[in-house]
Image 1 (spheres, rainbow, N blue to C red):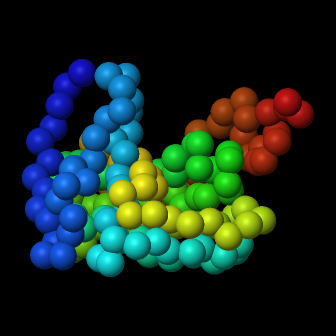
Image 2: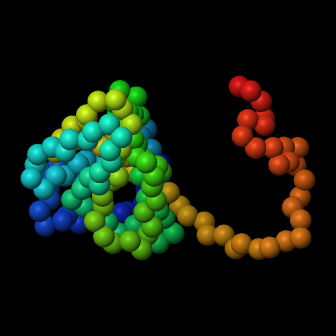
Length: 153
């Protein structure tokens, strides 16, 4: 697979022993990101609540790329833990702290522990678009058909 170098630095209070984001398998598209809690404790997330979870990291994404932050499927299935803005986009020119917005869509309080893998990051190329007004659009078989217009299954 092609690789892109993403430079990262630690926040002053971060626990560097947790390591940088990492791919859990050779075939992983997303690198796991860990909660890096300043007090090394936990965050209790009530059903329906959301919180900004610190990672202790800042990064420099190469120009022409973005970092997409996505939920971890296991947390979503087992506990209802998701990211309300998924996928979240981090633009190449942002240099602030990396925080992950986590939401509990489950029915029970969820404990986010220090070092827990809370999200995954996919780095992807970006194509910027020229937006142009035209008099009409070309026709397609689908046309203006919206949600569910291509079949019931």
